[in-house]
Length: 177
Image (cartoon, rainbow, N blue to C red; front, side, top):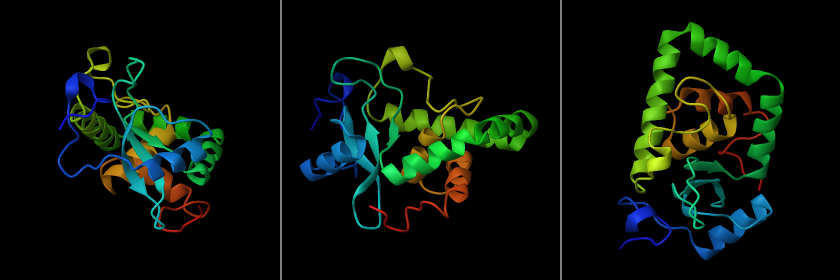
């Protein structure tokens, strides 16, 4: 069955469940506003509450939206924001420029991101554009962490690294809801 929030009547991939009303209420509380375009909970806290969501590539108002994975857990958002403020993205960008293996892994993360978004339908305006600065740089650690949480360890190396860097402050394995 197609989902009206997805482009061109696309359907959610097999095994991906739409968010419940309770999930959307939690996300609204986390964000301090009504969520837009949420088609699934991408990752959950050990207590079951959403910590990252998966969004449609086109918002209900028609706006193209390349951010497929959106970090929502306030503690995670705050921890990642503090890390961004310390210059971590600059350091990661320098490493991407100097380390071909890391750059290749970051490009693979970009390709996975695009493939996961394509599962939700095509939006010509954002074709080939992922999020978070991928594939060539790091622009937003929140996106990389959302992707890492949704897809699991090993898919987004800089998202995994960010999770390790904030582990003393926030971890998906410890409920801080």
